[in-house]
Length: 169
Image (tube, rainbow, N blue to C red; front, side):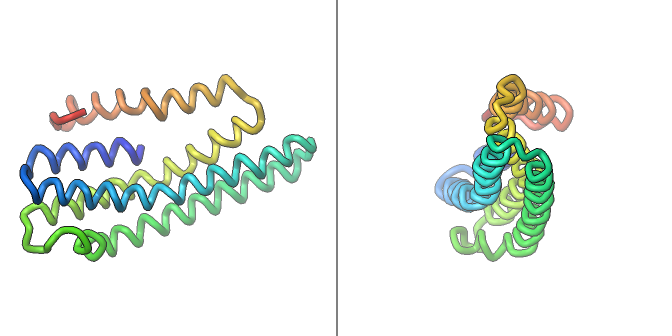
């Protein structure tokens, strides 16, 4: 979800603001969203390692408690990061794009769009890595397919047909 929302903002920047300032704004959103993607990936790796240990020891109670805690903490952190980004997006974008630039407002919007997808991205990373460590191959394939291709198609169809957004998918 976060990647699709980032692509939406990239497309908007590319189509509305050409030239140097469009590329600078695109680069700012890309750089900051790459930094923000570290949170979901960290929770995913924690789920992979921790659940693998409990699954291997066949300690179902500890596995359930661990995953419940990991999902809850991941959701809280993702929501907190989203709130911080929504509030401080103008300051973060200002590090890269001058405020007088025409693309500044669009870059701020693009960063906020990306942050809006952090919660589903975090939960997806946790669940996908848990399923991988629990050797649930079919579910892992489904989750990875949906993340890599299925959501792209869904968002492309949604944005292109429902919202009327046509861009560089």
